[in-house]
Length: 112
Length: 114
Image 1: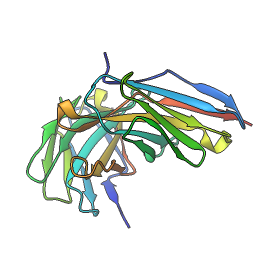
Image 2: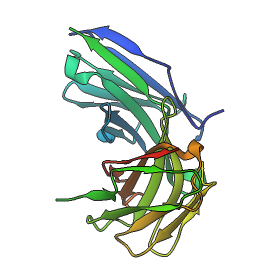
Image 3: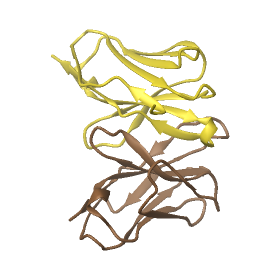
Image 4: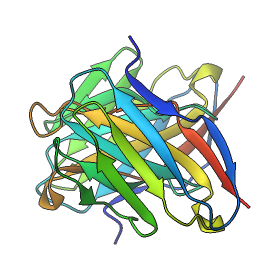
């Protein structure tokens, strides 16, 4: 089992819809979770971090964490064409000395 | 505000050649990392340095060596380049382990091995 897994894409949603991106992780001791956005040909940029169970909202983005189910998700409300990018889930794996391990990424396409 | 600076941005090598990728950060971060990114594979950790003077292997260390020259600089060396090492390489830095701050990335080095 991979340490961090994301649902395979590409994910296509119409403009204005909610995009839902999912991620599961294997280390029950993990405490820190991040979502990065990566535009084609660019470096990843942090868009959300979450450390506690529940929801964390920042503008149109909501991160959701369920440690019991080892599941973290990212919701993008009112999706815009400018949200089209690859979204990377990343988890700090403490049983490996605190390394940040990335999922394979989900490509999101928002159609006008 | 330079952040994380990687050099070079692009490089083409022949199989068997060696080269060093340079990375420097000006944010006074303790930890530095080297990742490679291949299509459909996300980011895979090659080596990391939790603090000055220490280095550890990541997920895919074979064929690479690293040097943490000082707190600011962390270099990645390919001793004998192979076509399988064609990839985009990202350097990152963070204070992870101290305050859970996430990583800041450089712009990447696009490396092709012929």
